[in-house]
Image (cartoon, rainbow, N blue to C red; front, side, top):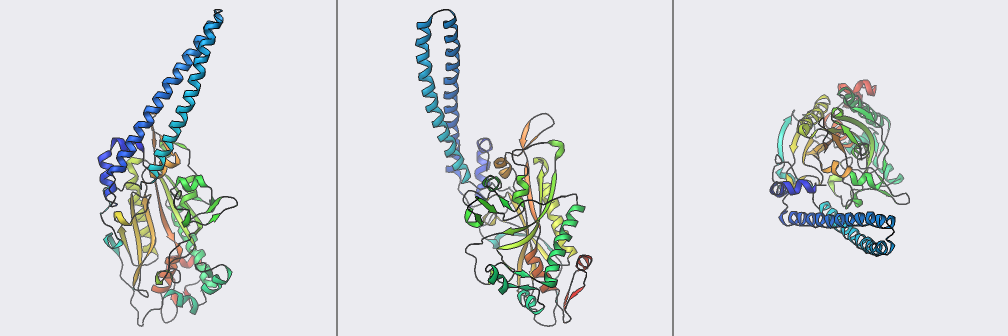
Length: 423
């Protein structure tokens, strides 16, 4: 959620940055400032009224001590009027504050000025391309055919047990999942991340803190009896560890990594793009999260991007890095990089990671601050990234490493797998 103070102090910049998302924000920015003015004026009226009431209370006490009961009783009637009026002012102030909050919640994060303008994914900026596509003697098979051929993943059994989008991993397919999770966790720990195993159910406060609520309820599975939500990503519970926390400047940056299953309803998804592992309702992911000093968050973002790219290099996958344009960014992000792996079998790029800087958008909701060395308290910047999401990594490994003898596993995974080839 954007800060009202930042909007007031940077009105033109706020309009300029939101325009990168193709939003004409001038009118709503003016409304925010006007409502904030109303809030300040009503707060001042209430403060003055309460101050007058305090003065009268002291005077009543003095009059009683002086034996002037009739004069004191007259002033008591006045204090009762002030109490009624202050109650009315408090209700009006509460109404204005709620209206202002509701208005702010309609505004997405203001993109960084580094974000390219554009409306569609086709206008994303390619910032890096690594590796060459694999060469095959024959037409390569898509991963869902390979999974059936080698009995790795049973999509139909998942439909029987739960429904579409809930595959069952078997044998070497299950071992590949486990190997990737452990490999990704070990790599992150070596880079200084602390492993976290968080809950996979969250409450409303947690979902609000990282931007899933309000308005995105339909994207999450909801356990209605307990009013809990199944997490869409480990970012949510890990970032919420620091909700309502004041950190020391010396604590920054904080680096956490966590593996969790993730749950997404993906309402409205259909067609060839959801086939096999391309889009699931339940999947496994290793997530990296950093809490950063505002002055260094974009350096941290680049560090996280290069780290994710290093994982893809170690897995021997061809990939590209996209800087998302304003029209393709998530609601909460200030700048996002997507990493995509090319599938020769499907003849398309598959997104396997997003790394984002949220600046203060989440920390403002979370009330997550740090105390600077000089004593001032400021909001931190939050960042997160997939490192990595397993479904499309598995799809890419199966498709791009297929040979006439079987599917050759990357060298870095062999110690985790206990085998070199799926045959």
